[in-house]
Length: 569
Image 1 (cartoon, helix red, strand yellow):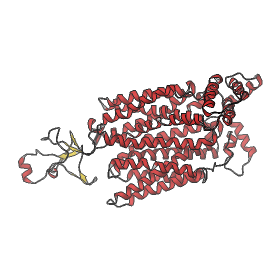
Image 2 (image 1 turned 60 degrees about the vertical axis):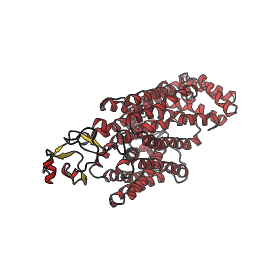
Image 3 (image 1 turned 135 degrees about the vertical axis):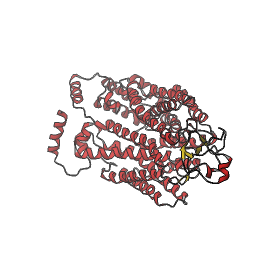
Image 4 (image 1 turned 90 degrees about the horizontal axis):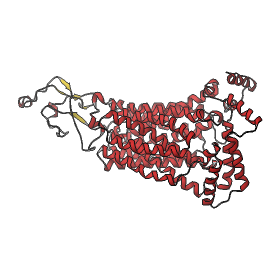
């Protein structure tokens, strides 16, 4: 979104320069040895981003706790033989209270009487169950009971950081280049990751998590853009999906790190330190040739392309390279006077986000797309962070939630270009919604079935989340595609920001978060039926084509008149 409004290169100039790069691809190869090597290097940092994004499940693990009684020392154990005489029963949670104790003196006479006190008071200190987790930020900063909302606030702020990072680092990468912003983000990620491990109070920890969240956008999204910009059109779908497999690998590795490292501070260091290794990329990963072309830096782009051609063992004709320099000169502003005048007229009529909401067909599709992104992001991260509330082993639940992403993404590779985007998106969201809603009718003693349904929901939501990226980009007209995707991405971040707070509802009734995700996914799937299929269709370039896209009959003259009124405004 920011790159679309902040760039000083017009849409036509950018398209002209990118066409120059596309002219070279048939000679260079759409996915030759050079592209494969750089692509692999750029996919590996996705593992780091997954580690940071999902580590909150263990860094802020909600450990079982109870009141520390007046006669107990700080090193007291969680298990309490005389619990029925000291802790009241919480009928809502169907367990002994974790936030109150009985109001009594707890003398020998009191215990011998076998008569429990009839009043209770709030805890002042807590004893934690360290049988599963040695420590977490929750236990160190006592983020329980009245302060439980702070537990999820760190993950929420992490997603706020991801939103800010996509805007800030996205704009900076368009202005200053993909490569320097990638390394700036990587350095910040390592530094603030280590600072988070050393935080002496929770506000500092949350601030560090916010900055780390912003750097995941700088590292992952910028690396993703570099990778996709050097791949040919027919390979981009597979390259985009395969990149997600690396993120899923990081997802699973998070469980492995947390299982072997029980102390949350050491775990935070272990998750951050590997980022130092990727700093060596400075000598291996070049700037995006496509970005250099759009900036009119054809000579630098030519050097990179010649190196790529050498590694791919191909030859790019001199006239094609000379044409590249000519077109990049135009992209840099060296346009003939008449053409320059036309460019100025195009800038004056530049489409904006407003145009997506001015016409009924575009407005309907835009709202459905924004809701789909909101639901997919919120449900994906909500299910990822909710694994500790499913019952059973936290580590196995988390591992399963990551492992089901592999078949989810593999399903996309097999079906997206065969069944169409619409069928996959709608089908996956509806199946996921139904599976999650069914968890509410499963008996409490069949916990395995609840976990199974949750994992089915996670698998198909993974597929729909991957689909919505491709489907949305094809729905928006070219002149507002970046703006539309930017708005959709913002909607997704809002879903991610709100997702952690649904976890608190699980403290009141365990199935409630799954019911919320299920209802949203079902609604999103049904609404997606309103979107037109884009597979093997000519995609819209202008606002006019965007409004007509998917409509069989329309009064073109009336539409054109309305379009003129919009641009005049």
